[in-house]
Image (cartoon, rainbow, N blue to C red; front, side, top):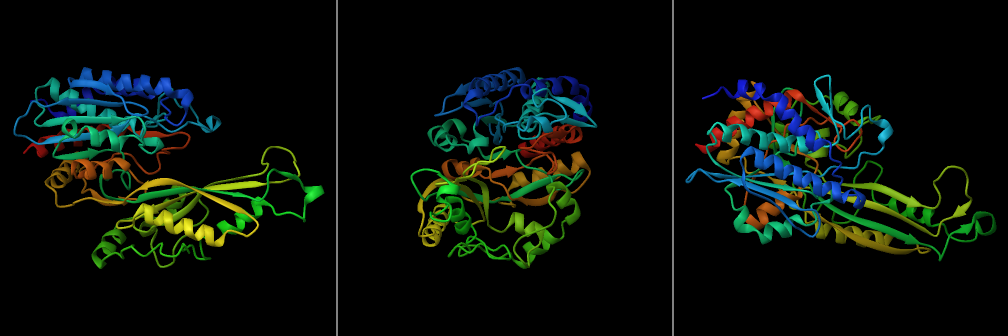
Amino acid sequence: MPDPKSYLAEHRPNQLEELFSLLRIPSVSASPAHAPEVHRCAEAVAGLMRRAGLEKVGLHPTGGHPVVYGERLGSPGRPTVLIYGHYDVQPAEPLNLWHSPPFEPEVRDGRIYARGATDDKGQVAMHILVAQAMIGQGLLPLNLKFLIEGEEEIGSVHLASFIAQHKALLAADYAVVSDTTMLRPGVPALCVGLRGLAGLEVRLRTGRHDLHSGTFGGAVPNAAHALVELLATLHDAEGRVTVQGFYDDVDELSPAERRAITSLPLSEREFLDQAGAFCLYGEPGRTTLERVWTRPTLELNGIFAGFSGEGRKTVIPAEAGAKITCRLVPHQDPAKVVAALTQHLRQHCPDAAQLEVLDGGGDAAFLAPTDHPAVRAAVQALREAYGQEPDFIRMGGSIPVVTALQEHLGLPSLLMGFGLPDENAHAPDEHFALENFGKGMLALWRFWQLAAA
């Protein structure tokens, strides 16, 4: 039997080239202009699966971009693990802030720089490449199924219906998701909780069309003014959300949960450096990790009104709007939160404006079962690969597939990611540490051995 560490290191050049072939494809799911490239990337993922020795590999249509599926079911009586990931990426703009072209992968200072390097092509490739190594040596000890989608970056809009329609194809004992991060360099992590999401768009109108500020200024309402007045009612001076009922279903942490979070070594200075922010902000009496992991939020994601281009245009805008999302915690119902927020906006809308609210949908929060046998296997595998006890963490983001897998297949999900929080996912100069690319594959190899037992 080959030594996994030596075997993987020996084949590292080929592994990187396989990953780079995916990173070169601008599979931006949010852009209709990139739809052919998204499809080309799906074909490339399928090709990598076939080279790995997976079977029944193919592209499955959805209402949007295809799902790529492959399997290896050669171990009767052993567990079946469903591996989830996504091959679509965020837009690369602003391009001028990249130090190398976003779709021309480059290794610098022990990091792979490219859009999708850490989110999520790098982590998807790790699973397929480990499967290739173990299948090639006749060492794969359990059954694997791969579900790789192309719409995660636009909310996985068709994935839940695909899962519901393919229950037999996707049946497994549990799922493994590598689309999360570690808390700190050199120390692996298992994510045991995700916040949910609810979103909406607000539009205000104060007239039929924009007006000249010299002719009409001071005599008619301004939609931008009305929007700012309305949005200012959503938080108090300390950062708490003022929407009635917003916190009704929010559980307080137990003393043990709070101790577990406060015991993690988080430097607020390092957190600020990662964020690029000037100061910390949020609910009083809460630590930074409590705020981003265990408390709900309401954020303005974008505001639009009037003229914001170069130069001067003296206009009174007749229309203004904003996009709002809320991060939710366990037991909060996205539909209930949207309804409460909509009611608040209607009650506080200035009389001079007409209001329209568009529901953007949402997903529930997630807590993992930490007593599952797969968790114990993952802890040991990560300990062996990194030489460190893994952190048990939560994350402030959302992964829609986790709730879909639970709802439609009854599958618990193991969130074992190998990115780092400062790797610029969704931002210029996205990158992925070569150290975690290598140690992560070693951990997956060992995990599959332990999980099979």
